[in-house]
Image (tube, rainbow, N blue to C red):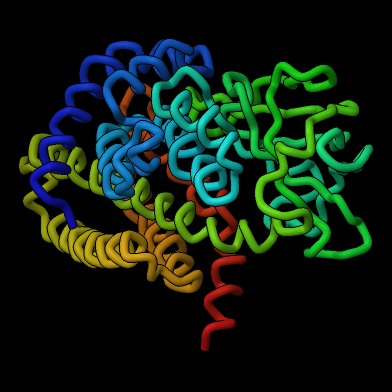
Length: 378
């Protein structure tokens, strides 16, 4: 999937991870948030929003995004991976594909440089995978170029919620129109009426800030509408395959990490006068995991090629997200078992990898929703 340019870029990302993330990671995990300056350092290193067209500071090639997620995930740093994904791989596409030229010129260069951090605000306390259950409202006030939208409501589980400067907000503009009554609005977080809730405590991904957001009659100009009014569902159906594929990319790389450190561990750990890795049960189970990883890598690369060519379908992306994240869970579970009691200790990396893996089957649409989407393609 990758050419020489991306291979060189991979080396650069690997250095960035080693020098700018690894030394601070344990502190960030304890504090529940990365340093804001990480974003500027990441921007200076060229690893944010690489798919942005060249005229706005990017490369125009999504393969660079995939390299970033592979490297961060394989290093075992799920928190920063989640931060970067929400910004570069999920939110950014809505500005590229649905933002006005003014929005693109204003915000895309800042997102590439790390000056501005973006979040996407979909989930609500009573609406997760079922977006039609959203309660956040955006009421149009005025007409023509002087019109505003007034937003009221609450969001939760929002990645980058503490650091974000802008958020892509899904709100109902016509409550009686069902899925055709939702719109996307770009909200600057310094607007009156916007407030952030607490930084939520999670099972894993501790260093990825995940927050509540509150909108108390937040007024934004009609020019902040992304796409057309009522077009949110169609836009999300267009963008979600990319989000689901990048979750699969993160999962396959993290699962590979768990496998590799486990192979190293069982070759050293001894029981009953021999290395655990020499026992037939261990070798056979690791063989099964290696086979699953190989199949997963092949399918993920295939889907990435389809995405780059503009051919990735919703059901194919859903298959990748479903199968790889389920496989990821099986891999880390078996790897923890090989570590025995030490696998349950937070000081061992495999323990953190186990906790970090669980959300992969939930966000980006639960795996139950993935099965529903796939079943419609029969």
